[in-house]
Amino acid sequence: MTKQLIVNLPVASLEASRAFFGGLGFEFDPDFSDENGTSMLVNGDAFVLLLARPFFAGFSPGGVADPAGGAETICTCRACRGRCPSWS
Image 1 (tube, rainbow, N blue to C red):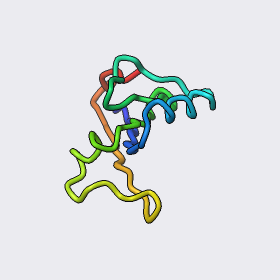
Image 2: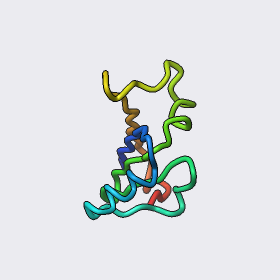
Image 3: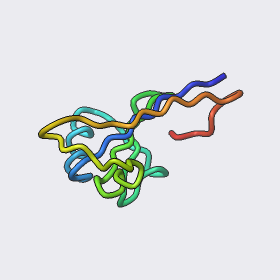
């Protein structure tokens, strides 16, 4: 069974976040990147989805936390029989 970890983070600016993490050496998957978010590759089975705050809010019925007063993330643990469909 293949296991994957996917962490979803709301960001104020996709461009600035991409530049910051790209500067640290992370790569991004163009197949899972658009104006709403980008998939940052951590390793073969771990990804961070950097999502524009309005898009992230669509997955969070309680709204998006104010980063000045708290933190919020959505973590996904995925297990597939055999190999999980590629995210990288």
